[in-house]
Amino acid sequence: MTIDFTTVFGRGLLPEIGKIANAPFAVVSMPDLASVHRGRLGAEPALVLDAGLDRGHLEELVGRCASMRTIVGIGGGQALDAAKYLAWRLRLPLFQVPTALSVNAAWGHRSAVRTDGIVQYVGWAVPEAVFVDFDLIRAAPPVLNWSGAADVLCYHTALWDWRFAAGTGKVEAAWPYDERLAAASDEALRRVVDHVDEIHALTDDGIRSLVASLAYGGGAFAAAGWNPRHIEGADHFLFYALEYVTGRSFLHGQAVGLGILIASALQGNEPDRIRGVLDRLGLPYRPADMGITWDDVNAAFDRVHDVIELSGLWYTILSARPITPAFRAAIREWIDAADPAPWADPDA
Ligand SMILES: [Zn+2]
Image (cartoon, rainbow, N blue to C red; front, side, top):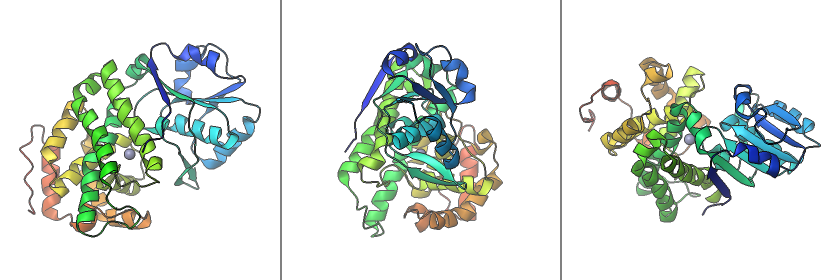
C-alpha cells in the first residue's frame, strides 16, 4: 500500500548533491532560500530557477530546462512541487531536499499547479531520493515543522468521518471503508502522537518520526488509487472554506490544526485529547494566530457546504450536523480559552 523510494537522513547533505546529480543540473528553489544552497552544493548548478505554481510559468521553466539532465528541488512545498513538475514533464531524475517539514510534498507523486487560479494536482514523479538534513530542518522556523505534524494529526478526524459515512450508508461507492487503509493511517497518526514532544523539540528522533508519517501521507493518496478518505475529511474542508471566504493563503497545517479541533468537537471525537496533542506540539491554532478573526471562521461555517459542493468533496460530519449558533459560541470560547475547561457540547 505504499510506493516506496529512498529517504536519506543525515547532516551536511547539500555538498553531496554535486557528486550525485548528473550535470548539467537545475536547482528549483525560492529566492529567500538562496543563502541555503548558493555555493554549497559541491558543484555549480547550470540553472537556479524560482519556483511558482502557475502552469504557464512552469511550462516556461520546462522550456529552459531542455538541456538539463537532473532536477534538484530545495525548499518547501512550492519548490518541491515545481521540481516534481519539471522532472515529470522532462522525464529527468529528481532529488528533493526539503528545508522544512511543513507539508508532505517531497513524498507525494503529483504537483499542485494553478491554471487561471484553479488548483489541479497533476503528474507522477518518483524521486531518486529525498534528503532530510537534520540541521537544515532545525534551521527552519519551528512552526513550519509543527504544521507538518498537524497534517498527520488530521487522520484522527478523517478516519472518524470515513467510519461515520460507512456506518450511516453514505460512503461513496468507490471508497468503501477499508480496514487496512484505516490501520495504516492510524499507525502514522500514532507515531506522531507518541513522539509529539520530540517533534516539538525537533530532535533527530522527532524529525525521523515526523518524516516517516509524512512519507506515508505523501504516498497514501496514490497508493490507495487516489482514495483520500483515510487522509483527510472535515478537518481539511473547514480549511478550504477558510481559504475560500478570506481569499488568503495559510500555512497549510496550521489552518488544518484549527480544522481538526472544530471537526473533533462536531464529531464528539475526543476533542480534548487531540487538543492536548496540538498543545504539546506547540502549533498556534487560534484564528488570531493566523491573522484571521472569528468572523472569518463563522463566514467559513456559512460557506463550507458551498465549498463541499463546488469542489466535489465527500460526506463528513459537516454534511450531517448543522453548525448551530450555540456550537459557534461554544467552539469559540473553548478554542480561545488559554486554560480551557473540557469541551461541553452545547447541542448534545
Ligand atoms: Zn493536508
